[in-house]
Image 1 (cartoon, rainbow, N blue to C red):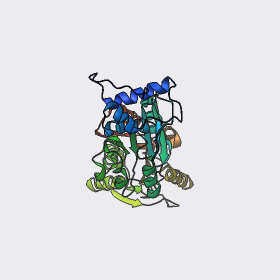
Image 2 (tube, rainbow, N blue to C red):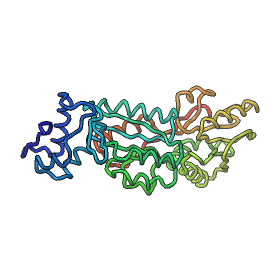
Image 3 (cartoon, one colour):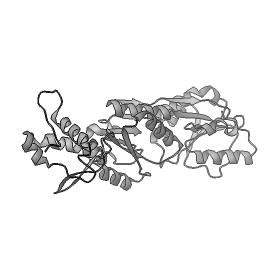
Length: 332
């Protein structure tokens, strides 16, 4: 039991003293990878501690990836990287340029003492549920992007409530959890409102809304704006080879549909920003130069990653609405 040292009246919780003792033993090579730790019962008897105190210490080390448990046999050293103070489970829906901006910003601000493992559910609820289930108990923080999948709350609620952060989209079933999220309904309404002066030069607003991956709030905000300010509008699920009418403005959430609209406009010899207009969703560097500049409504993805890192490092429990902006260019 010389691996673990416990002192009374030093102002440090005993479970943390157990953690520090094991970290020190690993750093001094008294414990190496694969070694078995003293059993929970032995530590309890040696220091007159409750099982809960010892289990709390061992579970913390387990979440950080330093030790692992074999049921019925005990706890063993898994890693000698004691500098890893937090181990983060990061579940994205998919990897695209916008999510990559969040991820890179998060890594930039989270620091070197945090291990981040990234996973993707690809909008599949079965994959989502399995990844949540398999990760449970193995991380100090769970950052989850539930998107618009149904019944994600039941899986998320199996995780420790104080260790979960919701990212990008939230819903009423997840109000108990801290979050950094987009308000898609408000963002598109405000973006269109800020473009209202130019939109009045056109006849009809058309939202391309496939409805599979896109948040419903986007559609609701679009309809609310058009109804309130008396714009003629239409919602279509895809563009395909639709004929663009002079005076149309297309609001386009996906870059694939953006390409289709621009290609068809060229075939029809229509001039973007004059004969018809485009507002794209989500800013990229390419949209600054494509077709002389594409107007966008976009949240600030790098800011989202930075705030997310602060929430992990400082233990923030707020629900934070990420800012969005209209970036006006020549396509409108």
